[in-house]
Length: 368
Image (cartoon, rainbow, N blue to C red; front, side):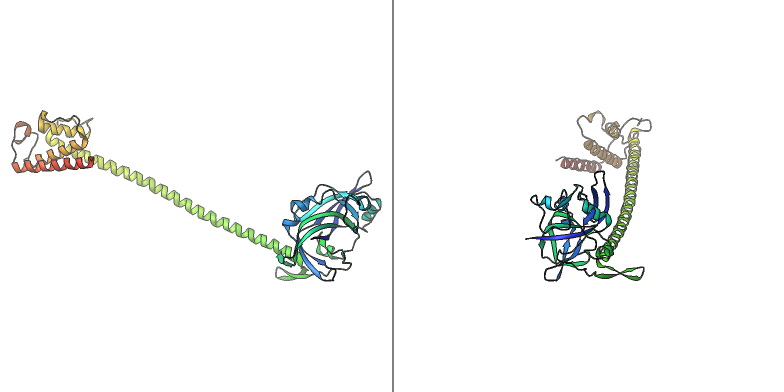
């Protein structure tokens, strides 16, 4: 069931125009936990949470609503507008900080005079709300219920002091009080410590200060987290750069080792081939296959055909030829020069043939 409520606030600023109308600007409500005196005399604390009072619904319902002289005994509608309306609110309702603000124009001369004289300078909104009996805590203060689906019906200009000194003492512009409460509301004081000294302040003020302190601590924590993450990032970046350099060095070393191995193998091949080809053989421009074929052909003569033979085959044949020649003491000019019909032992020939067969068999297995 919808509940009728009234908020209180102080006029922030006003100015007149050429027509004699008075334009008033006021903060009409804010989030918080506020006391409402019930008809049985007991006080219940109700919460206006930011998600409710700053919702699009609540903010929009403040626009183009009647401005009244005190609260009328009934909600203002199109049927009684002329009876109660002494002006109207504008369409500039907005949230500024933790306040809902709006401006309005007062058109009634008598009310304008009382506003100017200070007799009526407080704003009190009349609104309807769904009240949910759900205890909780907001900004460090407990509440018994919370207001939802807030819909503003009218904005009343009320007499000074109806809410007692509460508004001035608390230094805020939106405090609720039940319409049946004609007395002063007792202010709940709390202790707040500044630089080691304790001060008594209204509980709402302490809640606000505590919230600000919490925000500052959160900001400090976030800053420390950013510094920590930046430190980790810098360390990882340094490690990455070191790893990149190590990788480059490894590549360079591997390339150098490969080059060294290739040069060594070439020198050994040329040294071995000279035994068969002699010092007069020109190795310039010839690759390893050309050199090995030259050795094989030197030993075997025109009988060896290299057409269609793979590098593996040539390598195996070359290795067998070298082994055989070592066993027989072959040289480019010796008595066992194979090209001149030299002889060699049967055992040596058998060993060479076995080596060559093994090399060729290994090649055939790899090919499969």
